[in-house]
Length: 224
Image (cartoon, rainbow, N blue to C red; front, side, top):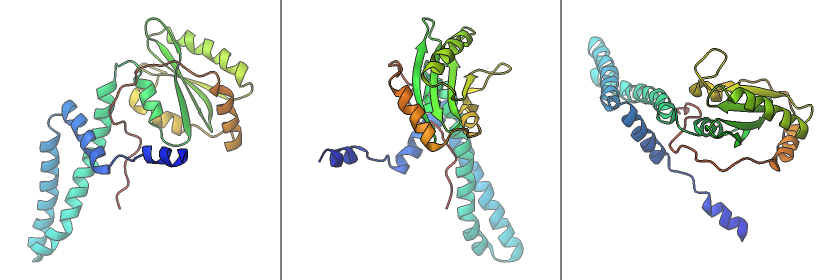
């Protein structure tokens, strides 16, 4: 009975609503997006109709290029929505945690395992690549990462630990590239070892913290 209730609570968000939310966020950051989408659609469709007139079949080519025009506009929107989503949370407390927790497969993130008074913080992610400690904030976060690494090594000895600092300076990882950074890391643990590490670190936990709301991009949706 309890399992049935749990399943009922996990209602998937309708795809149309997801796109609507993404469009709302994108329009706030980039007010010109509706005009750009209309222009791309009309230009692509006009090219198809023009080719059709040249070959003597304008209606046929217009029909063929109609879904292509829609696809081109959708691909452009997907790219712009991704950058807008990052722009909407950049500079907010917990932005790094929001991006890390949006990774759907392969990684489990515990936000704010360490927090300083000036709101510098460290997040811990566990995946097949091992443990990744991600720091966001000022220069002082480097020392926090070092301290957290020593603490983590006591709970998970021998497990690979990588340190990442969010930022735009040399040696740092920009917020919009954070997901790709983790997803491209080589796998060093088996699935069983990864589960053991997660269980071992689960007791350590993290802190309650506000996570910026809004649709976060994970990957470009595949068109069928």
